[in-house]
Image 1 (cartoon, one colour):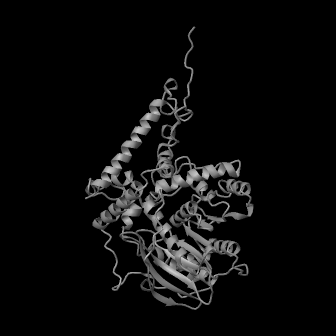
Image 2 (cartoon, rainbow, N blue to C red):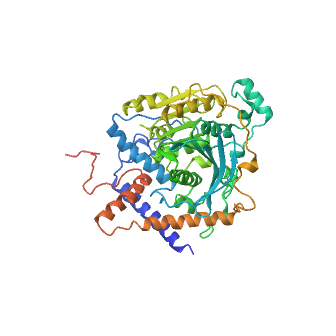
Image 3 (spheres, rainbow, N blue to C red):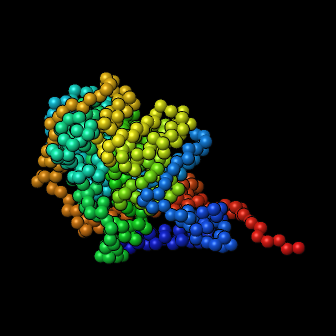
Length: 495
């Protein structure tokens, strides 16, 4: 049934192998400064490959070096954006087809309403969440996407009475309700400030269990029964060859969530923001980096030169080769970027990362458009950092709210009021059979999209080279050499 997909993937793999062998045999890679850890001094090959140097792990160091000019950055930014898209399996970009969203179950509160939303980003792959709307406001309205991150139960998160009291005592939270339900709190406050908010699930959390939590966020052991020619799932060789990953699926969901909110007539396309913490911070800067429809972003407790993302959903093949999260955040420029840091891997942001980002934004002519602040609390999106985020969007979306912005108490939504699934709209199964169906359908559609690029004239040839050649450049690590791109090195001299 999937013969065409398998043939396409094998062709791609074989082509990449042939290109790699040709490059290696021709000796076209330059430099060998990082190769000494693998080869003796007299055996260093005449090419540079980061895989031959000291490998980076979860706790590696990922600095960012600003470009010298906007022109130099433009070239670098194009490559890094493409690298992210290739790694996420969204190169070429997904088609912005019409989204058939189901919106139901409206809940009316004092200054805002909340509705349940679900739609397919790809057949069988669901985006699920809640849409907050301010009451009594005329469009066009600012919109803030809100991926929640790795909070227990996702949108349904309740920290509990004991935890919130400790947070209030420590100064991390101000109100009991907002502290117990911090994910709802930020959506409610933004709605009260006049913003629409789409609070959507990470895969495996809350209603997003068309793929399970253990699969997306805790995968640690290969599944032989899900790695065969016909029955393959995530984290298998078959899915990796097709660049289908947990990070990629969540990125696809974020792109389609953005497509959907942009289709709402009351949304102001000039004021579309995104904010999330932890894994939601990763989703924030990944989407903002690759999609310029995002006009301002506030990733919380995630941008740093240290640990880049500890979950399987935050990593993918090719993603951080010679780059990292600080450079991903730099792709926002000249659009506004705000960041909060905590007593975690982000704690050094004010001395490692932020100075370079300030230099970068200054070089881009907008030094006022980047801000970052460390707060001495554990990994969080607490009241203190939320307050910083409110001021950020108030400034850049010109909301006109008097500062300081203070959260007010609210009536939290119950799990039943939040959940998109019920008897009328039953939840998808979320088993291995549906996983196979989701991934194989996506693979077929991706293959058709790439096959549709087959050139038939000069214009289509140029596009084919841009897309397919651009992907190979990322996968190989350098562009293909020109026919006259020959280099020689004198190794001996004889009379």
